[in-house]
Length: 177
Image (cartoon, rainbow, N blue to C red):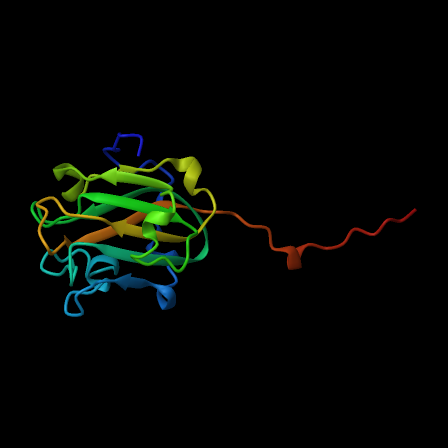
C-alpha cells in the first residue's frame, strides 16, 4: 500500500461482492463454526456478532475468484482490536496457493492494518498491480495481539469491472472493392 488510506471510497468504485464466483471461494485454516461467509457475504458481514476465525493458528489464506475481470482499487477488513488481522498480503491472479508456498511468491501488495482500518477505514491498493484481476488471494499473516486466533468481521473489496469486448457481437465488414 502506498501507506495512505482513503477516508472514503473514490467515486466510481463499487463493492465487488456481486462479481465474486462463490463456487470457487476457499479459505484455509478457518474454524468451521466461524467460516468465511460470515465475513464476506452480504448481510452476514454487517453483523458484528458473526466473524471468520482462524483454527490451528493465527494465519488465514483466502482465495476469491471473480466471475469477470475486475480492477481492484481498495479493500476493507474489519476486526476486533486485539484479534483483528495485522499483516495482510494480497496476490492477484495466483491460484492454488497454500501455506507451504505463500512466501515463495512476491505479494502484489501488502498492508499493516491500523486500528482505524479494523474499524472500517479502507486501504487503497497499488492500483497498477490490480488492473486485470480474475482472482484474489488474501494472506492474513498475523493479528494485532500476536494471539493464536485471528478474527475477521468483514471483508469488502472495491473497484470496477473491466469493460470487455464481446467478439461474437462484432460483424465482419465486407470489402466491397
